[in-house]
Length: 124
Image (cartoon, rainbow, N blue to C red; front, top):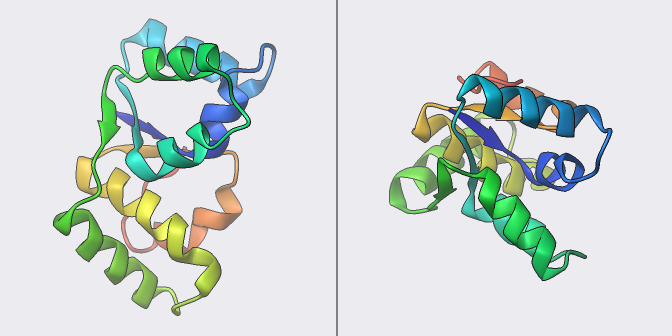
């Protein structure tokens, strides 16, 4: 399973972007795509219209993953292990959701998520 972060959701809906090409390739290969509820929230905040929301959701055969007690504990562990940097709070939540689901994270902002790799995050 591949978990999409907000940047991947946004850019994946723009024709001729590397993200759109990757989404097409993954879907053709039968990969399940998902997103954390936090990434979906950020995506839905837009700007995006109802057509974009429908299209984005149609890509997510793996669903929009919840953020509950298990993900919260993992996010806190990641946040604390990476120096408690305020700028990493939301990224820790997105990373934790992917990790708990056993998914790799597809992001256009790899630099933001690199601190979590040594703690078990698989990046695409």
